[in-house]
Length: 290
Image (cartoon, rainbow, N blue to C red):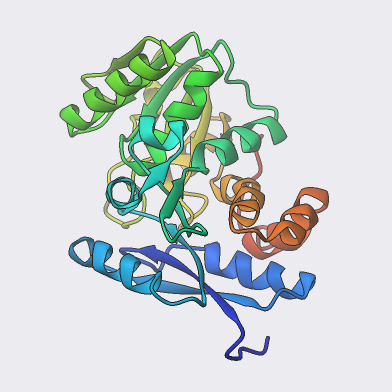
């Protein structure tokens, strides 16, 4: 990859940045399409997000920005326009500058997550679903699930007010009854999703008590680091179907490319995403859904 003064620069911003895999994906795919662009990871603290994003977009070579933990909710407040899904979730994970110079925000986590469930044959329509977390990624997933009419959508987050705000937003925008759980007990749920940061640190507690999972349950963990996570390993020990988070990233990447005008890269991945899967799924290191 040769970087010149003509190269468009994309950024991924997070805090911490070490668990983020998006730059690897972009920088693996862009050269395959002969696109003169590169993605750079940036560690940016919450207090600096606004000034960093606005400063980066003052450069005409900035092609766009992707946001990860914990910046998605704050990013929704700094864009000039965002989609219904992003407004409902109060979260943005992609920003671009339009022709008039305004910042447009979109949210693709939920779409990528649903496509990953489809790929692995994991049911969600008409299912009883427990979602752990109410941050940016969790909000995106909850919003996408609400469109698909689950039998029950329940949220748990230690910050109850955050979960209540998300539930109210979903009910208002989509008319789906969404409850807030008082605890993280997964008993009675068909699909349990960890969309919280629990599992990034070695001493983190499990997002749910695994011994309370239904034998027929499906468990997903969207973390991009430490896969298979302690939650997935514990679920697999009980022969419970699991899915790691990498496919969510893979399957939302074409949406990112389209959003940024990189249509050739989007088309390539939709036709064959093996180059990304081989990058993110080192041999024998992560489980597929079972």
